[in-house]
Structures are given as structure tokens and as C-alpha cells.
Amino acid sequence: MRLRIAHTTTYRYEPAATGITQVLRMTPGSHDGQYVAEWQIDVSTDSRLHARQDAFGNITHVLTEGAISDLTITVEGLLETHDTGGVLRGTDERFPPSLFLRATPLTQVNAAMETFARQLRSESESDVLGFLHALMLQINDHMTFDADPTHSGTSAAEAFGLKRGVCQDYAHIFIACARAVGVPARFVSGHFLRADGMVNQQAGHAWAEAFLPDLGWVAFDPANAICATDAHARVAIGLDYLGAAPVRGTRYGGGAETLTVAVKVDQAGRQGQWQSQS
Image 1 (cartoon, rainbow, N blue to C red):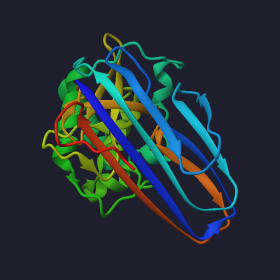
Image 2 (image 1 turned 120 degrees about the vertical axis):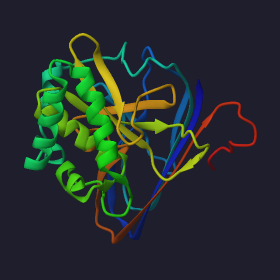
Image 3 (image 1 turned 135 degrees about the vertical axis):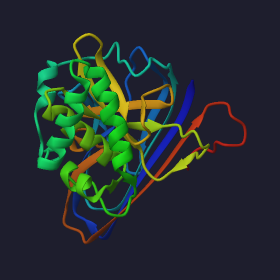
């Protein structure tokens, strides 16, 4: 499948910030299920973007700017994707899978989550893949998609208790529960071509990958109750959202900060659906 993606993030500061530093993880890489045919990243200032890779191999750009009242970051490109049944191949793996057993503040389990995970694991006995599929489906059943009660700092335990959240929360719960029973798991940020034809989206997408010795890394999307397909565009990974966030940084001075995000994901070549971001 050929996916055309545009992602625009705009910050406004009132009064102006005296300085900002942002780390952008908005550029995907190629692997066996994904080829980056075109990609560009632009910012509304004259700042130079310093490209590098982080510890996980994510492509990052570092932006530093002085006094500023507004900033717009736009990425746009074309990906060719293939359905691999969720199995990941051809990625740059810099750490042993055991690193992804490490809990973070966003992926800690509480007693209810641990019981939930261990019960599912006992039902699957030695079938780890079966457990992961069951975990994905049970999380999808347990949760209601709702953007209101959670935010970027909401932990897995908090979202699990609320039984509500967004794709980031679903992924954090999956990761926390998998790690609780000894299965390495990690966070993935990216984009998703919706089956309902909704091109304009309010944010990017998030899912999880879990490691199985016989298969390697396998991608699970608990928000949609499916393994990743050619409708998923993989951008960055981390121990949790904070390690894979599209934009993360700090500002100095200034007053109120307003953030707006606009995302478009469509199948390339489809008539009447795509207009380039301005």
C-alpha cells in the first residue's frame, strides 16, 4: 500500500518564549514492511535542524530557537507498506529484548493489572503468542476510546482504572501487562490509515511491539484490536510514549502555550481526498 502522510504541529506562546529546544521524532525509517519513498520536514523559522539517531535508532532532528511567539513543524511524505502479519523484520535493533522489560512511571502495573495479566497468561499456558493476542483483545474490551479523561502524562494504571483513554493509553496498558509476566514490550508511535475513510485526524497513532523468541518483534494495536498491517506507518519506538513522542522539548520564559496538531493519512492516488498541508 502507498500511504501519503502529513503531520503539522503548531505552538503559540503568549507572550513570546525567550527560547525553545525541541527534539523531533517525526521521520520514519525503512524496514522489510515499510519503504520511505519520499519524506521532508519543515519548520516555520530559519533554524537549522540537526539530524541524528537516538539510542534506539530513531531518526531525530534537534531544533533550537531564540525568542519566538509561534512555531509550526510540518512533515509530509510517501511510504510504501506491506502487510507482514505484524511480524517485524529488518529493523536496527541496538539492545537485547530484555531491556524492554524495564518498567517506567508510565508503564507500572498496579495489583489489578497484574492480576489481569497473570490470569490471561495462565490461561494461555506455554502459548505466548496466544497470550498476547488475548491481552490485546481484552484491553480493547476493557477500555472505551475517549480523549477527554487522559493526557500525555497519564500512566497505564490510571487509564486502566478509568477504563477510558486514547491509543497511547491502550499501548501503555498492553506494555505494562506484557512486562509484568516477563514478555518484553515497547511503545511505537506512527500513523494509521483508518478503515472508515477518515483522512483528517487529530493526532498520530500509537501501538506496541512484543518480543517472542521464535518470531522476534510482533506489533499489536490494542486500540483497533489487530496486529499491525500495511495500514500502519511506523515512525519511532521507546520504553513508553516519552521516548517516542513526535515532539518533545522545553521552552524558556513566555506565558501560555497553545498546541494544535493536524494529521492527514490517506492512500496515495485516491482521487479527491488529499490536499497538501499549507
